[in-house]
Image 1 (cartoon, rainbow, N blue to C red):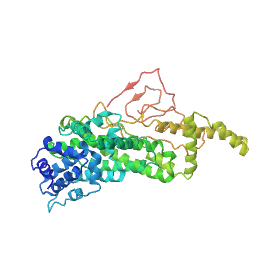
Image 2 (cartoon, helix red, strand yellow; image 1 turned 30 degrees about the horizontal axis):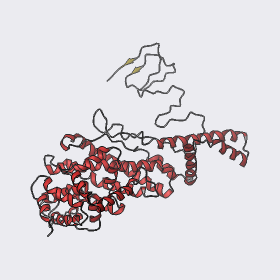
Image 3 (tube, one colour; image 1 turned 180 degrees about the horizontal axis):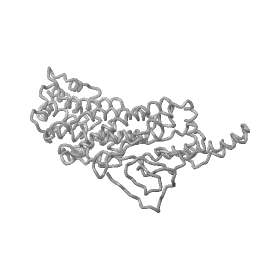
Image 4 (cartoon, rainbow, N blue to C red; image 1 turned 120 degrees about the vertical axis):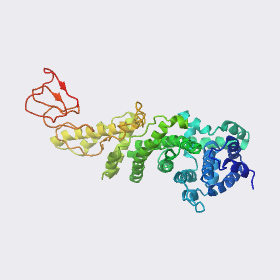
Length: 469
């Protein structure tokens, strides 16, 4: 029996209240120790997950979650990914000596197990890395304040050990350049983004807000989950933005994988909005400020799929990279392209008149798409309507992005602007969205269908009547 058996048992005693700080502090301090104390804590915690009492198991999960958040995350996760002493899958499978685990406890155990598996795959914790490198320090500060624990004091004690201090410096150098926002595909952008999305998938299933919110254990777990989700979603969102900005430069295999990640992100964002929408209404209860997060556009899948299915994919990819380099360097390649075409062949007068227009149109389209993806980060939509505090009504409106590599049909008609209907009838285009009566009588906006009588539309001479129903 280790010295931590007693303190762990007291922290997980069957009392419907969160573990007390006086029990958690020695547990958290042990995670910073370099003498293997974290292993003793985990071994002492293991029997608590096999208890038939749901309160004991719930408190054991909260203790483990607190160790990951407020303790030495690398020490905890590195031990757990190499020693399966907790067997969280038994909790998630409901294997409780004949007892069935409450559903949210199963999901909670699955989420914590997903963090251990992600660490085993990535060799670092995405939440810790994102929090430490986050420009918005609000998200990193909340990590150091759980259940009244003086984490700063515990960290100060651990820094007295020179070995631990030198290891900390080495680790920070390792993770500084691993932000998903700046990671390249060659360095594992696709793999790490998928790992973050898997953790988010398991987290949003922990719907503790459907349980009794007067239960302090429920609110404690929900509070930590919300804080984790804020950081995880930001990391996943940065990974998706990075994917979109480099999508046209990827090989076909990588682009196909990136599109799957993006489609999954679009569906996942709906669940995140729902989860954070409820948490936003419970801000006072949880004591967590829910910011109006921004996210990558969620309606580009059709345009990205169209580009991926283009038979001239490789040619388009090379063309895009050349145009992007030209834009980055501030050079104009249109003159060189025209000179090359004129040297290779001498087309007829009609074709020579059309070729420059097509080339200019293609170059302009490429430049527009380059500018669009370059501005994704600055023009991200927000989750919530600031006026109503509810999910944005225009949240999932389709944004049509034209494929810059599709051959345009030259018809002599003006180009249709994506998202705007084009009226080809000789009549003025109606912009207001209301039915328009064109007759020589006063124009009525009353929900009646439009009548075209051959008379010119009167714009200013007659008064306008507006009828609201």
